[in-house]
Length: 444
Image (cartoon, rainbow, N blue to C red; front, side, top):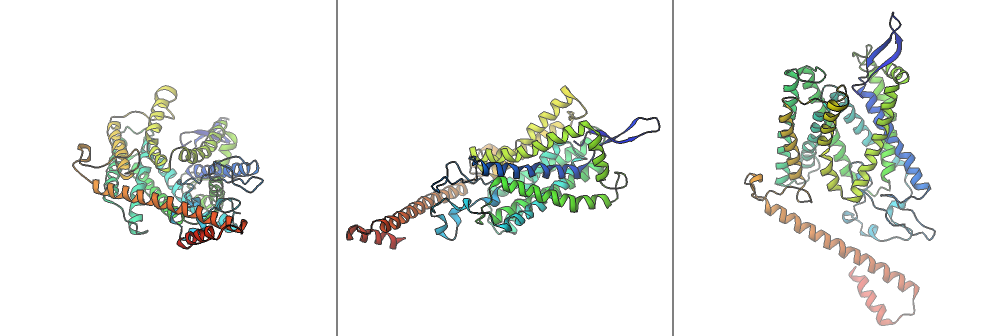
């Protein structure tokens, strides 16, 4: 939408409509939250019609939860994930009559609590949209991958979580990729090959804004991870919708007034909301683009949940890092085969950008070890002689032990429920059976 042009309803002395560039980063941030707001409509549709959907438990007439109800740990739904293996109270993991914790009534405070990630998302998106004005879309997407650097630093020094050596190796390669991609943007602008004729100083400002946005977004992710062990019965569509609701409210009440009174090039303001509205009302192209943007934002968040449901949260994170490739290829196709106004040209520095993208994918694959689709550093040539096999083996043993403990806890829970229910329903069973069940209950 940054490359769109439209009229604000005014005319020149010759009677021609005044055409302006639709450079409205705050409006795009606002539009993102409006798109997410549609999640509330989908939430109530799923609840009312009892549609099977990840993260929802619909009790049948007998009070039993329907099948296919799974809570999905993604960047948008980690607040609603109930990590039962880490619960301090093991009784919360017991099957309860009438469904699990996700079928509880949502407390009122939860609707206000979900404003916190919306604040982080608002700040991060606004900074990234401001930076996007001075950067190509492909570089914008690659610089967003720098968030993993800030997440790792905060997990180590704020949350006091131990990161392994291969994590820091992955972070190192991500730093290298950011340097390469940022340098590509600066070289392209200084060499006069920038699509919009952006100056080097503007490009540098765009890179700084993008890095600031990535930092704020990493704070959001760390906050979500910190509270994901809470027993919060908030389904994913409600989480998306409420974040969109609070983001919309904050955009209107806080972001737009600041943008209007801040000096800038948009009719004396950094962004004039009245001019934005006039252009939206009088320009069919902008209206059409906004409708597409609206549904794209919503379905992006929706498919993020479904991808994790059908594959895993790890694969969601891995596939998300391939987004810069698809965006870049799409931009090239649009530029050379559809309309050069909206695409991105191939420059002499694009080869360097490809190298930065490869380094980004390589570093991310190292960081995600030892999960599926990762890169293991075990002394191979692509590991540059680094051998961290001992760390991988130790993690695998921990995972196997955790899986065995989880299975044993499930068996204990199942046995405890069975002994209690059968004892209450059949008080005339033999003394021998009662004694055996009493011994089992004591061991629990």
